[in-house]
Image (cartoon, rainbow, N blue to C red; front, side, top):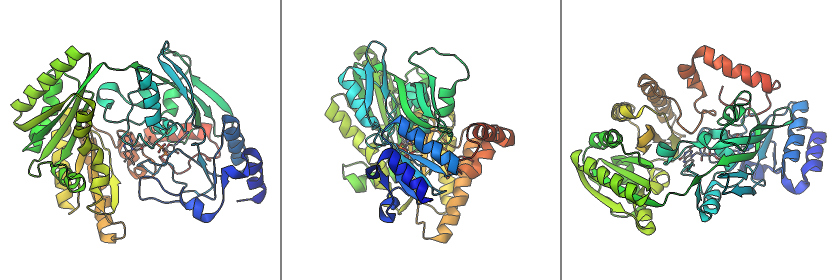
Length: 456
Ligand SMILES: Cc1cc2nc3c(=O)[nH]c(=O)nc-3n(C[C@H](O)[C@H](O)[C@H](O)COP(=O)(O)OP(=O)(O)OC[C@H]3O[C@@H](n4cnc5c(N)ncnc54)[C@H](O)[C@@H]3O)c2cc1C
């Protein structure tokens, strides 16, 4: 990188907020995938003005910029594949405002999602988006990926809560979208366009979100099934009965075995599936819903059901689900996390296809995830140094996407396209859809500096 440019960055944000040493830059070369790309420089701006200054300079010099939150992404979005600048937003981590009257909050992009949850829950409010990575990931990364989580089934995903944004455009100007009101139809809905844009259309520097009152009661059920197909059928039957749990999470036998080996909590190893379900609302509604869930599970041949209402007991039931990501890497070191999503009624067919694909390509393919909204997480465990195995992985991934699309589903429910899924984008959007996206990108980022090579 041109040294005059580097000097100008250092002058803008201070030497202590710039990393140039090779060893240090390696730390910003990866995310939650197995992809890598080393940035030429890592910068940590402290406010919107500094972000705008860096982007303005990068645009003039045509230097690629990869925005980054906590780097937990599962599609390669923050990887500086084109080298250039890794722009890390973690210093901008203030909660600027929480309003109980307006049920809204304003945060900087580097706020850790789990920390935000704690702060607003202390005040009797609730922010539903809950990616499983919430102890680490940032609100900016959540908006850029339109993150979901277990509660998305009842409460929706990040886009359903973002009211407004402050954004630095790819040419370095500062723009505001949306606002502080729940209703806002002024002009194109740029807030929605930027939510889920994976760092390709602008740098998010401030986020206004809407909040909900905290539910008064909660109950959790952990249900064991001898047959995976019965667990899958239970999901649709519960909804048919008019109950919308906050969460319905599924774990298959491979996943259960890995979790038990990892946590030693006494899970039965001969069941084919576990469903973890949580209902929330008023105490009367919660009691009624959990009763219906128990009845439906029995009718669908469950082996047994554990129910908990106290916090510690509920946490015990959640323990298995929370351990999944760490537990399954015992199978093989390289984890390819997919999140192809199908309409809920197609879960049994999707699970069957996934099992067939795993067998066909002789791969470890545990299935778990957000069954309530059809967002299963088929994970392939492989070894990236085994060339033959990785070729089989590539073919299996293609077939997973084909199966999801054939069932009326999508390539990604919440992890985004990034670099991992871009070869398949045309299958879902077609050439016309893809060209529409390209036209938007070209119009706002004529020099292609923001996250080049991501999405398409
Ligand atoms: C164990 C584990 C569990 C996970 N569970 C879930 C889950 O349940 N649901 C889910 O949706 N995801 C999940 N994820 C994926 C990931 O945590 C989310 O995508 C999260 O939103 C990424 O946040 P981050 O701060 O780590 O962003 P990063 O990974 O740093 O970046 C993600 C993308 O956002 C862009 N970006 C980051 N900050 C900004 C900004 N301020 N402005 C513009 N662009 C920006 C980056 O360029 C990149 O494209 C999980 C990941 C792991 C490792």
